[in-house]
Amino acid sequence: EIVLTQSPGTLSLSPGERATLSCRASQSVSSSYLAWYQQKPGQAPRLLIYGASSRATGIPDRFSGSGSGTDFTLTISRLEPEDFAVYYCQQYDSSPVTFGPGTKVDIK
Amino acid sequence: EVQLLESGGGLVQPGGSLRLSCAASGFSISTYGMTWVRQAPGKGLEWVSGISSGSHSTHYADSVKGRFTISRDNSRNMLYVQMNSLRAEDTAVYYCARVFSSSWPRGYGMDVWGQGTTVTVSS
Image (cartoon, rainbow over all chains, first blue to last red; front, top):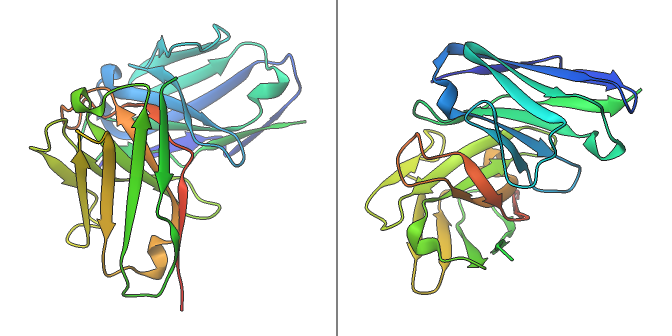
């Protein structure tokens, strides 16, 4: 099973700042099969990025994904108030599909 | 509008059973794989089970294998999971989600999610 590790656990930033979230895999993941989700309190997760770098429908271009192999990054170029949430990476390259533990982005 | 709506959650005693349902609207599930993901209180996301568009293939996390059974009724646009021999550690919000394709595992990115239904296993 591929274990995903996300860092940092919590990221405290101000609106307008840049957020850089890391997802590291215990084994190589094909970049075609790495996704990022956003979850706000009391809400379902929402797909942001798939294939490591493709934005899902309706996702603003301030969200971008990059990386390959075992190291992947989600970047939010300028944080908006609605971006403060928990972010999960997920690999769907290898069985079973697995999620990282999440990074919480909160307001500094 | 594309939507998923889960139902069937509730309080159940350890060892008991529960059947969750997921009603799809705005699209036909017959052309999509579907999946269940759960989230224990205050915890992260855990994939539970998945099923191909035509029910030919099913997949389970080790933690639920032999206890949970996923199924679907494409004519009713419904997804189900039958949960037996429930344990305290099955307590979670259960989400149904649409996956990119039925291909396992490489189709199992999840692009549409329901709002979840809560299952509590306690005496």
